[in-house]
Image 1 (tube, rainbow over the protein chains, first blue to last red):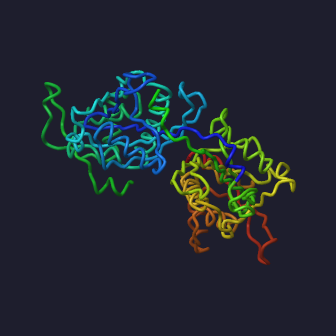
Image 2 (image 1 turned 60 degrees about the vertical axis):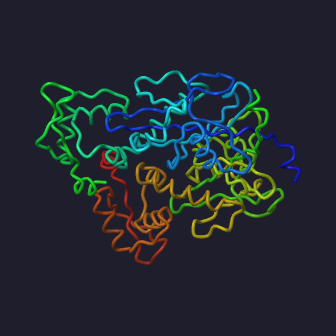
Image 3 (image 1 turned 180 degrees about the vertical axis):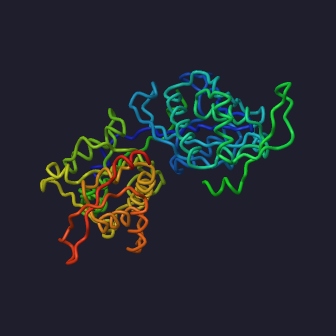
Length: 220
Length: 220
């Protein structure tokens, strides 16, 4: 087995990109790194893969250890392997991501853990290549949103057009014109206008809409 | 840096899944493994990641070393990390894949290398979890074929309906009814019937078609 003998063994880690949706906006979960280098800086939830676990196992274990969250389906995103991505020692990192309903997991995410949600417009600078990981995860999220009703599945039963617009702006990282956005959304025939309004966010109020589920399923 | 010190370093490898298209069918490139364990058995093109290279670098280097092929855009597919996937020593493997035009690379793939193309219906048993890697790469290929004109881009300028049908059967790993397939394909409005026939594969011959590129681009 000489071919194995002279090879270099490498540190293997996982990093978890967790997007949370609270019915109104998408946020990113971050923690303050607990050890050097870059201790106390904002980071994705990461750690090293142990001898007896797959990277899937490691991602689930680490997410639970650092945030208390469990039972989340983490999807493998991409492996990051630039030789100098970790300044202390070469580490290959397998990035995982998920989009969850924040409310559903609120109880698990107690103050005991140092994790915090950040709105997409307000993400701090992250350690190593974690910015790049988040960027790729956002791309994947867009891709998923275009091919799968994941976003609508996490929306509350009724929602206003401004909420829907903010959501799409978070996902596509852009601003939409209000009039155009409303016109396009309504023209899909997927939204059912309700008779009641949300009066919390403006004086005039905004009508609630529901998803026309029959029409929606047919289209996906 | 105590957190680094006590971690286990792991062998990291790459494996390359190369699909080739010759204008008629999709084939998989395999080599006979050159070292123990499982020496001389059919395998994907794989090897260990070196200290100074990313996994992208490693995939390109290894593909060139084992097959002579270079300048191919390899896409990262998935990382396979089951602790017992390699019987000699734990190895995490990052799988890469590409779909190429066989003819374009024919000169690079000389007899000097022990690589061979296998039709999709005729793939031998592969070592380790390579079957699983190929299965996942085929799924990705389907996904890409549905969202991107990659298959049509590799088709010759004119082709017959039987060729098109075989191609779709390779990709989707299923059999289509000839009548249904032709009807559906023609109903897309993407195919332009030519006046000449391919008489090589049947007495009656099969009309050639060309892709209506204007219509096609509009649809993708």
